[in-house]
Length: 195
Ligand code: GRF
Image (tube, rainbow, N blue to C red):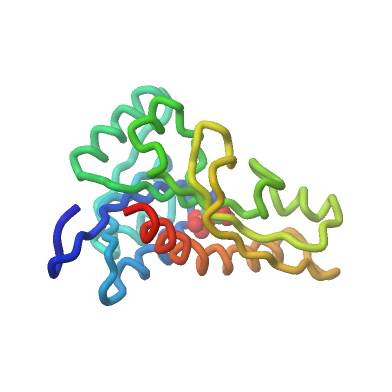
């Protein structure tokens, strides 16, 4: 952590694989006056991730990692996290599952956002599953990452009512809008309790 105006700034790395809307909202949050977080490094496993353009536009370092060999990829990421003195990792649409060995040095220091009301609908295609099951509500969750998929301690959730006319596309847009709002809120809450 670097000290700024006498206050410690928490160094964050955001992991992405695609669009980067959550990355954008986290960057916006980090640039707020009196913010105590700094996004130092963006990690992507996908060279075509649109989020990479967002990080470049904001002058944030990017690390592109080839995941053909997962062990090697994770080693490379860990080295770069250490080099950049990263305190906290935010997964934001990162499509790779982190190994136990990777999580170990960052236990309770990795957050993730998931487009469902966890513990319901872990994994992929959440909106489709939710609609198929005629759920009345859905939402999004920010949680701590542990070695089980989408299973760590929940930090914050936002519930959304599903309308009759909703389809996968409308639902994913509605949920994403809420994701972008709650991720910075959850990050703040987590930091206030843990740092
Ligand atoms: C979000 O829906 C997030 O919940 C999921 O992947 C999507 C990423 O969106 N894990 P974006 O890249 O942040 O726009």
